[in-house]
Amino acid sequence: MTSLLILHLAFLLASEPVPVHQLEEIPFLPTPMEVVDRMLEIAEVKQDDVIYDLGSGDGRIVIRAAKKYGARGVGIEMDSWLVEFARAKAQEEGVDHLVEFRIEDALKVDISQATVVTLYMLPWFNERMRPVLQKHLKPGARIVAHDYDIEGWPATKIEKLPEVEKRTDGYTHRHTIYLWRIGG
Image (cartoon, rainbow, N blue to C red):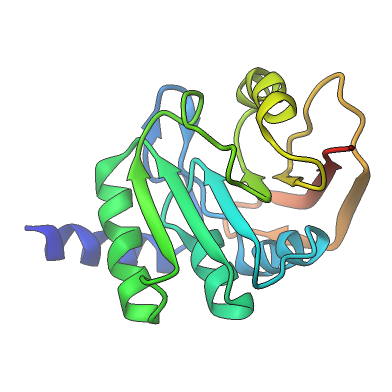
C-alpha cells in the first residue's frame, strides 16, 4: 500500500505542479527545483547548517541541502503520506543519515537548533511564526521564504527570480524569495 502511495505521488510530482493536497488551508504545492536551489544559495547554506523546512511536503528542500551541501535537515509536515514519501526519497538519494522528517504541527515545533528555516507557507502562517522565529533562533540564523513575506518584518533581502514560470493552464508566475537574518 505504501509503495502505491509513493508511486502515485511520484506521478503527480512529475506532472504539472498543481496543489496535490490541502490540509488546514495550506495546499501542498512543490517548490520548483531552481527556486529550491536559489533559496539555499541566498541562505548561504553550508555543511555545518541545520535546516528546518516548515511544511516540508515531499522533502525536496532538506534533501537538496543534504545532497548539495552536506547539511543536516529536519522536515516538518502534518501530512503522513508526504512524510513517508520524503523518507523514501531521502533513502533513495542516499541522504537519510543527514535528514529526518517528522509529522508535527510546524507552529508548535522546537526550532531552536535550526540555523536556517525555510518556508513556502501562506501569509497568515508566516505572520504567526514570526514571534517564534525571533524568540527561538540564535543570532546569525537565516529564514528564507518562497513567495510570501512576513508582514511587518522587513526582509534583509528580497529577490524576484528573472524567469517567469509558464504553465499549461495559462497561469504565469514570477517567484520571489525573501531572506531574514536574526541579529545579535
